[in-house]
Image (cartoon, rainbow, N blue to C red; front, top):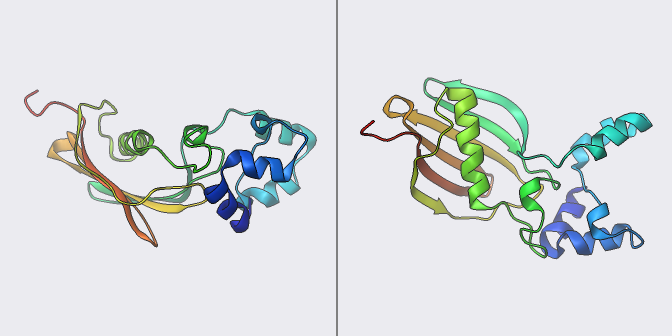
Amino acid sequence: LSNEGFRMLRHRGHAAVARACAEDLPDGAVRFVDASIAEAIGSATGAELNDLYGAPYPARPFVTDAPATRGAAVTIGLRIQPDLTCLRGHFPSLPLVPGAAQIGWALEFAAETLGTSPALHAVRNLKFERIIQPGRSLRLHLAAESGGGVVRFEYASESGRHSAGRIETNRADA
């Protein structure tokens, strides 16, 4: 999808854009990808296209910038692809990333980049300020505290902060 395609997807939903692109195909058979991979798609062989479109829907956003680690903190550039699993049906006319997915990604990325536990114990001080929709570029900032037992996260874009919170990865009394 181009920027205009993303605008239509955000405002009209997957089914409406799918019908506009391919009236003769059922909604579930139309898969959108980010225009940022257009060059790779344009030069792909038939087998490579089958692999791309035959692959499962991605579970996490595309990492656009290598993680920039600074002590017990890291910032990761992300892009929300239009074919993320969590966007399927959430919601049909207004696709947005669910809060549970945002928390899960923060937990996973923190475990991978900061070495924190991937086990969720509790979420505190959770704030959702702006919705996150397909095509959005974000910065995910993660900071480990209390010896890695707590991870603070924040998703932000040029529009400002989208969400933030504190994830407890293990019991404080353990």
